[in-house]
Image (cartoon, rainbow, N blue to C red):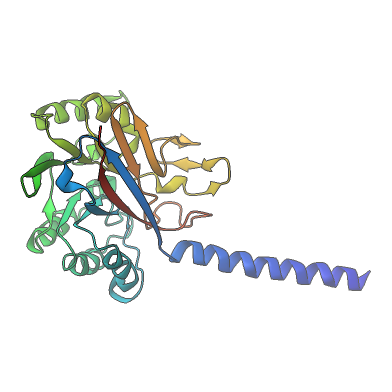
Length: 286
């Protein structure tokens, strides 16, 4: 009896050690996910255009001076880097850590940034915004810019997170507000449009405004991911969220959702490694 009990104790300890190491690795090692987006509306000169998509860093650190994350971005050789919100975490804001990443990334490619809900919640966001601008980051605040390759042009749109205006959404005002903003920003639908917006749950609003490609985060991959189930819980989507990771299509709108890099209220991920998304645009012949 004693030997049998001892064997079970040893097995339990081994399982606990393995589980601890697996969870640690699954929260500290960055996974690169390559996604190809094909569309006939992508201009020919943007064929092969590479976007490194960073979301929900939440002040997480990957190596000294973010070297691990920066090396993975460098390996992707992106044409631009986009940050889709929650670069900082309102619960433990550290602008210096956020800027360590930005300073390194700015040497690799032009950076375009939009806010997330944690920037809206943080008193330090004005400091971060000013430092981002000093480093040459394009902080898109409900506005668009145009990217050119030769004679071809695409429209890059950035939305400010709705929590800067609405601290809660008791009356479902977010959709109406975002819809109005997009109607004001998207004046010419003849350009292929890429929207940077923190919130994937608003995909129907984006689709109704004829956005071609949306890049989002916010859902943290559903925090805990299980085979055949996907993510378990996400902000503003609740239990068994619909939009947590990968590519989704509604009408002519494609949306790529990053699982993000850091954690916030829930401090660990399970089966859901921190993610850098690398997107390649492909012109699709009719």
